[in-house]
Amino acid sequence: MIKPIFFKMTENIENQVGELAQRARKASFILATLSSDQKNAALESIALLIEKRADILSEKNRLDLEAGSQNGLSPALLDRLRLTPERIAAMVEGVRQVATLPDPVGQIIESSVRPNGLDIRKVSVPIGVIGIIYESRPNVTIDCAALCLKSGNASILRGGKEAFHSNSALAELVQDALRETDVPQDAVLLIPTTDREALNHLLKQDENIHCIIPRGGEALIRFVTEHSRIPVIKHYKGVCNLYVDSKADLDLARKIAITAKCGRPGVCNAIENLIVHREIASEFLPKTIDALAEANCEVRADSEALSILKDARPSLTLGEATEEDFHTEFLDLILSIKIVDSLEDAIDAVNRYGSGHSDAIVTTDEPAAERFLAAIDTSTVYWNASTRFTDGFEFGLGSEIGISTDRLHARGPMGLRELCTYKYQVRGNGQTK
Image 1 (tube, rainbow, N blue to C red):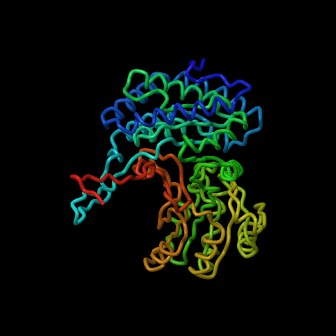
Image 2 (tube, rainbow, N blue to C red):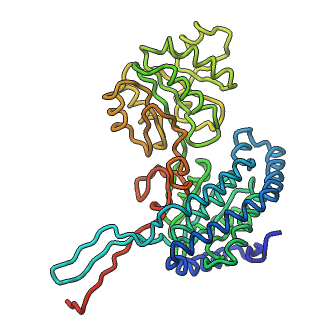
């Protein structure tokens, strides 16, 4: 059962969401003053309790998986929802890694002493209260709680209905873990309903909530952006591209392409488009299509790629890609393929079709790689590596609170530093004006 601190929603949802926001704001004032040791002790308490309650978490997650299967969730979405023992262990490791990271709060960004003797310091501070709205992946509950706590922010979590049992169990666990620490329990609050009305009211709490971070599908993120009075850090979708250059190591390119698409197709850093230079297309595509077919990946190719593949593999069923396909985040075992004449054409295609999330080039030509790295307008760009590394844990951030494709104030995987803003501290000795 969810403990009483998670109040039961009644008909007066607006007032209750407002109360949540006020409680989180009050907790944020305390959080901002805690030491690194106090925050790290709370994180260790959370990690220990996740380990102790692994079986309970698995059972609650099973309820969500059964409901998701009955409601027709795709295999890719069910995979996002699933808490395996390995993923529970990864949550524990992520929390502990966050605890080992340098505290981002109180860092002096700049300092100067003015001619009149004023000592002016630009110092990193927590944002305050962060609202996280997310779908499917219950590990987000722990990732966000840990990152917000370490960065001194209170958090209000609103998960999706498909993970309600898992999220409730994880949020209850966090509450229990904080009870014996110096961190107030109201530092991490879960909205205990998936009613859309609660979300609408949450997005209007601009007096007490300072930032909204939505994590989920494009429809959710657009809804949040259009209805929020609070600044939103977002990425609408993850249309990631892999370009195989004329001077690519084709075995390496094939390995990256297959794993970046088929490893976990339901995540935002999986590739959706494979762009291939014409000079190597006839050699590269047939073997690649064999591996994709073996992984049950549907291929949609432009007319030239389709012609090459039909000649080489007449027994395979292939579809012709539309312009819309190249703009689509499938989050499934579907891949669009396009052939280009040059590096510049590839850059144009990536900038046209990509969503600013993650894009990659495979090539042995260093000048071409450097041109690609500089010209692609994206949060994270790779040379001879998979886009699947766009992840806070992989970047050594101890997980991330989201991937931002915005430019203000954060871009790419958002770790502890990106959850801070700054203020000026001015020390004087009686200066007046």
